Amino acid sequence: MENLLGIMIGVGLSAACGFRVFVPLLVMNLAILSGHLHPSPEFAWIGTPYATLAFTTATVAEIVGYYIPWFDSILDAIATPAAVIAGTVTTVSMVTDLSPFLKWTLAIIAGGGIAGLVQGSTVALRLKSSLATAGAGNPWIATLELAGAIIIAILAIVVPIFCIGLLGLLFFVMIRKTGRLLFGKRKFSPR
Image 1 (cartoon, helix red, strand yellow):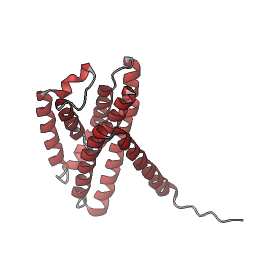
Image 2 (tube, one colour):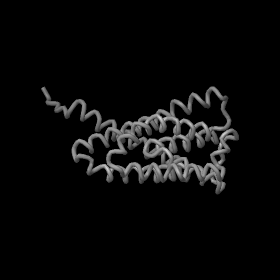
Image 3 (tube, helix red, strand yellow):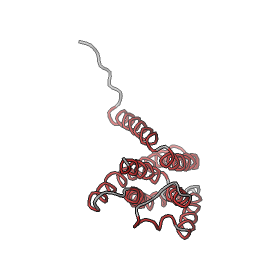
């Protein structure tokens, strides 16, 4: 049961990494320092004061960067692979009692995969916003992404089961919207 809870926490934090790379790592760091999370021993460095300083600096730089109109596109190009790496690290650090092969496989597929999926969705949304509003709507998108990263990271630690359910609902809605965009609404008429 402890492994399952760790996987849920890791996957929830990974999803938050898709919105903002460093916000979930900072939230995770603070939760470890306060004793609310216990990572696997090889990832204890995430809960050190040096990591707090590094994650705080990176978080502030990332938040500010997304409010600079031309720089947000550059950040998206950098953040996509970084989100996958951060998602993998958050998941692997929360799984404790599995073989290293299974642990890393799970982290890459579940953690890195969900972080990449969320990041890809936000990149597409920002691109659509840039085209529709000439970049004027991007600060609103940046604010929503920041709020999403904070809320999901906190939920992943405090109520991981609820967080996973919320993420499942979010992905269901995204898949439906994507299907409608790609295939349009189909009207079925009885024969």
